[in-house]
Image (cartoon, rainbow, N blue to C red):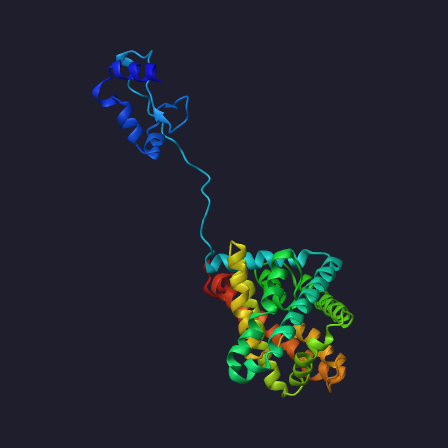
Length: 343
């Protein structure tokens, strides 16, 4: 090292290219790399610094400047723009529409199971906080919304499953953008709905045999009676609002580029629809039959006629009209057809 320093100190360079050990060691490494100067490292380690060759003549000592080209930049944005979200949603809908029917049923069954898992968590926590319900009912309602279904939707979106209510927006967007046809839309909706029913039935069977029904009883009975007690109009519009929240949660999750971002995307809207007391047809496939099993004074016919069919219609309206149609008008081909211009 001493010999190297001696050679450097004796080397005479033109003024424009003169380099000393002191200035080199003080130069930021980013400046050194950008300069294109040769890089050397002392034998004992330490920072790299530019060193001219000891065999170089003074007249040839000026370093060759070779600019460094940086390519392949990676976006660090946590979310994508609204127009890009819509295109991503349409592409996702096209993928779902192209799946074979048996895969959609299997993935739908998984979604129904995940909804059942989230529903069981919801029924275990908030309804069993009677003191909180008396002293702070607003907080108890928020607890019911925040614990349970947000996790279910997060599992569906990250692990892979077919949730009928989200598909009402995603596959419709694919149809609007010419990435799917009505036949594939019908296949996806029918198979995912059937799969969700199967999954919720499996979830009900699972929890009926766990010995945990006593801790689920209070909330399940209350919800089963509550959900068949309202007029058709109120039930329909509660369903519209519920799936508007759910589809927006799916939209936001598509915008996020991180797992944490997807969780936050699910947490807000899903917590809101549960906390407010809205109607989601797939959630009801688990809640109401469970309530009937534990003793609620409700029949399956009442559930289907006074809740499930009406809620399904309201959920479809929200996904198709309020989400897919609106965003296609703004960012997609529906808007292009009206204006004659690219959105």
